[in-house]
Length: 118
Image (tube, rainbow, N blue to C red):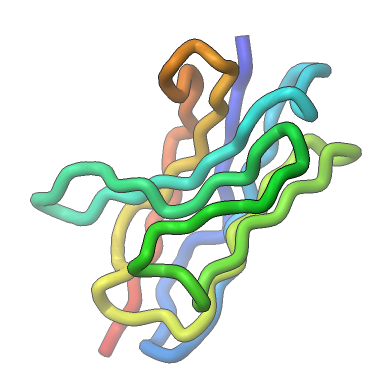
């Protein structure tokens, strides 16, 4: 069982920045691919970014490429999402998730709200 707890959401003006954190339980964090997803009101949840467990290059949705950066600290069992140049369309609940190789992200956090005002 893996527990994920996000933090760092809030209200920010367009053009501003926020850093989200996701703390994970368990000793095998370094073996999980960690991802960030988001869900805006009335829309389906969408992929934002992921950091492979193998240390390969992170990958991003086109909508956030160049503005968001995912990072992980295996010593702290934490994954981060640095968000810059925020836009109102980035407003959503942001979730972190852990992929353990089962073909889907198996564990999810409770989400943190990000609201970008224009």
